Image 1 (cartoon, one colour):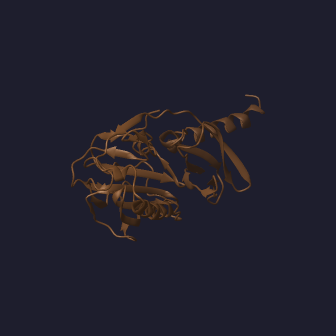
Image 2: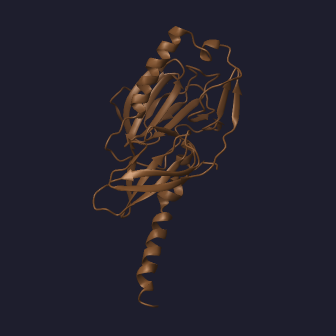
Image 3: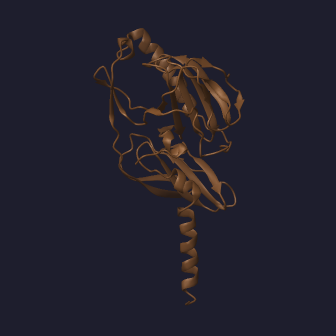
Length: 273
């Protein structure tokens, strides 16, 4: 082999190893509402990274650092960039079309709330947004997540929802069709950072898994945890119910990265392009 080809071959092998890493194969679904895995190199210390001005989860795989970037549903297909140190690193967001869902609600307040309920909703939204923006230094215990409950999916992430014919926010999580009272288990270790009984979400729990990687569970019939409580992987947070804006018992689960709600199916090996 010519001498000048050896370094080039080594560089190609190194790049391919990083590009085909386990975490990349598992999580790299760079679409609106998806996840981008961006190679940060092999620095001695953990590098920091940010996307759209918000800190990003960084993990180490073998000798390489990877940024695990949540891509908001509102991002258009094309080139996006994260910042890390003095570098801007690009990734490409592809296309994904989400289906529609039409729901009829008897309680019209849950479609067009009156001024008193709107005031309540605004306050509750501020609380929940603050929780989603939490960023603790801990590394998540696992990135391949467990299902919070065992049951069939009844509504996918990203579905455009129409309540009584009026379009509202897309579905920001996964719904599982399971009976009321089914225990809900946290899919990774974490700290409870918020509990509440909210107008739309009903009984709700937020669990911080570390570095802006957050699970939210809602519509629960019962909450079994308190703010500040540390949970091991598989710890019970509460029970399935139909509180808030729900047409029947089910388990709703959100996953958030860098304050972007992303498809939980990515983390349980159930993502569909």
